[in-house]
Image (cartoon, rainbow, N blue to C red; front, top):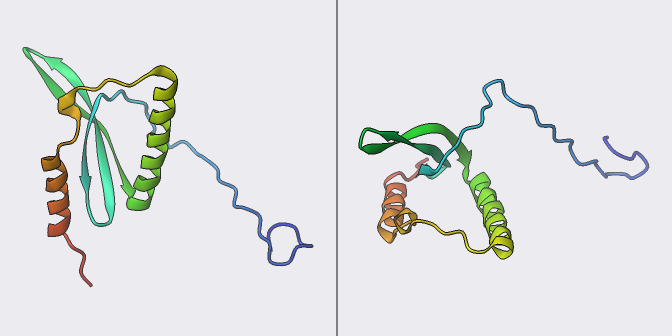
Length: 118
């Protein structure tokens, strides 16, 4: 048994260690795309690259995570943004960057088209 042997049935919390992957890198992103499935979520981070007379969204990195991890990430981001805005004021965003009902409905339809079976 791990923990204090004088307390029967009590376990010490697991030790969580972080280790940096040799592939770890830091990238700048000012956009993203995402996909959602019945079992996971993937976000691809984008950086606008100016080209002759246009701008190209270059994919920098993608992260795939479980749905429970997505939910916890959402909770963290919501709290961080709320705290930042309480201290610094509202973060202004470009209106066309906000999700539309059509975009949300497309994601939901995709999920409906990909039901899991036994």
